[in-house]
Length: 467
Image (tube, rainbow, N blue to C red; front, side):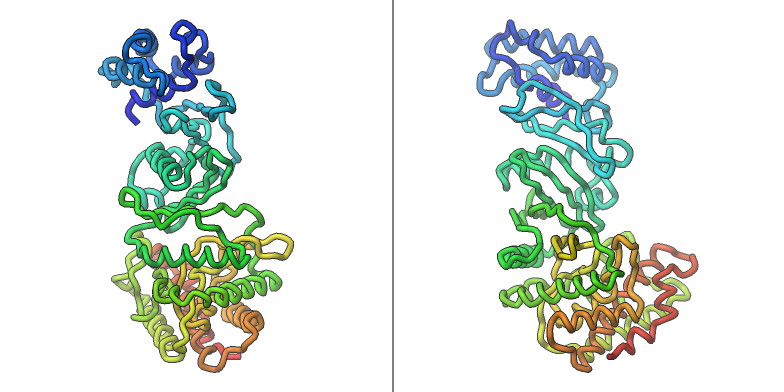
């Protein structure tokens, strides 16, 4: 943010209508913080010259004294390398601007829970962002690797301003507070708007299948209308300045469940069967959803282009040719036994993308769709349903895979036939193999990781599952 904008931000906090009363009205905290973060001479010059300009013909009643401060700032900051400490995400300048009607002209520190990274609020006149230096510490001062991959290597302030413009333009309100930042593939920010709405903004990693994102948005709207616990779409997919963004309600009830608990396992199986059944109502979804993210793309054998370029699937690590051969067998088995009845379901259905309270599924997240047969989608979920759960479950063993598939049959009310069982088993084997391949790419030259060791030890048991 240019220094003149930062100065304008500070100046436009509740500037009074009278030049004579303006100086007296400046909150002592504002002066203290400016004095600390700007060279004293610069601060004094800005103060004096802005007062002169504000009293003259450049005064703007519609926009406070922002134009005046903007006029003088360039002249003051010619020697900014020597005299000015930048008021950005790397400066411990913690100011929260109260919204109109709450306390115009007041400033107070912002604190946040230990597990949250950022707190920001917009200035109502300039809509620029005041960053919370006390909260922006450690990694919070910079973007995460995922955020940089999606949004570019830019300052956090720039991303906050970008998202703030997006919520104003598409949701009608500015951001009051950033509640959390997350995402393994896409950049996901939970925010609170000025009107109190809690919203999740997702910026999708390029390249983006906009049609598939639109299908997922339509699916969520359908599910919400049916009373299913998933986020209500607010806007999107919106193509904004080269980014594809969506906004939806933030579901904050419940907690990630223990997927290893048999009761929770049955709840997850029921939640999958229920939303697959509901989504049959829209017969356009399958054609738009496509084959899903990379881990669902078994159709051409090993390996699809990974969803994150951090790993390389183009060259088999020495000694792991067996894993490529196994994944090929899993792919061929799915293709041999899958039916032609294509449905759509959540492409990453596991405990970490669900919230449970009181034995009830109250939230589902990270909605990417995959179009495939019901048995294959159930097999995908069976391979990983306990992953990232509160009990730290990893990829499913063959026995855990079987237990989920049997629960799924009970939930849907119709057993899988023999061919569907083989397809589901091979789909689970594909997912486990995909994760093992990812693991080997991340651990070049090292001994087997946990998932790779599981596949090496139990490979045939997955493919042979029947019941």
